[in-house]
Image 1 (cartoon, rainbow, N blue to C red):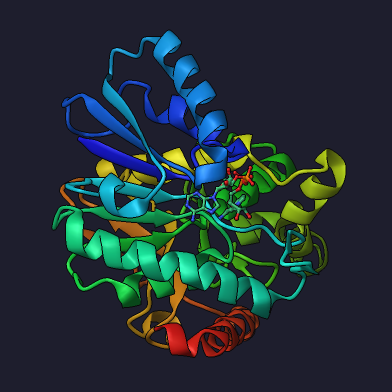
Image 2: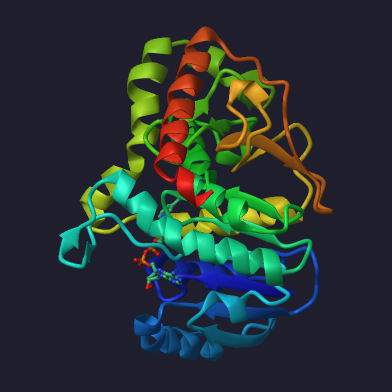
Length: 328
Ligand SMILES: NC(=O)c1ccc[n+]([C@@H]2O[C@H](COP(=O)([O-])OP(=O)(O)OC[C@H]3O[C@@H](n4cnc5c(N)ncnc54)[C@H](O)[C@@H]3O)[C@@H](O)[C@H]2O)c1
């Protein structure tokens, strides 16, 4: 079981790798070969992390290797977790990268190369989860540049779904595990749409239990959509522990069958489901059979309010695709 992680010396990976090394994340009992990838200037920091991983003496781990290039790292990979990317605000060649369009272009270069390498060298059955932002469009670039269309590409929306569940559980005073069928549609950005109209709590409809559309529209949605920014403001850094937990949860959700009556969340290539345009990576409610088959759950009913929100997030994804059209 070979698991590749890029951005391995970054803050998300510092939590993510230990999560992945816990028993029961992967379905297979094969021991894990970790392939940790960084840019050359971060290799020393990565080597420090490797020492800590060695000292953790995980019984699930067979080997730990480090790479400063993606091509060698992804040979025969079963999973690629693409966490590394260039953050907004970094200064490159004397210019601060502030605009989404610039960010898309710079990260576009990274994901073009990674997509090609994964398609050429990783296993046919390889699963790829893009965490690095802008995650949906990075996934589109990676997928489009991969010569292998059988591998399964996703972008992470699990963190948005966990945030949406946590805030709902606080509002309704229920446990997060009692929440079923909570889907996050669209982009991993402030336009995302967490839908409550199809969500159940112990068999009762969440939207009916709340019985207050104004709270959903004016308090709940903005709170989930702006949660990332709220954490950056408070911590001075973007969410890392929760993002790592969400990435590990996505791996688990794909590796094991979805519990009956529930869904899990990730952004995958749209086939037009729920009116999301084909050829973009959008968040959808998904189910896994635990044997590599992942499907969109298609029986959610969307109100006009929900349809309008889906259109907003779809338009943003189309606009992002337009910024990088020459890369795909
Ligand atoms: N999808 C989500 O829900 C979600 C949530 C939180 C953060 N994120 C994103 O995840 C990414 C990583 O966050 P972080 O806090 O760990 O950032 P970080 O800056 O701490 O770490 C990123 C690491 O990636 C490395 N890197 C950059 N380019 C690389 C490349 N081409 N190959 C390999 N490594 C490379 C950097 O050297 C750095 O060590 C960011 O883009 C962040 O915005 C996504």
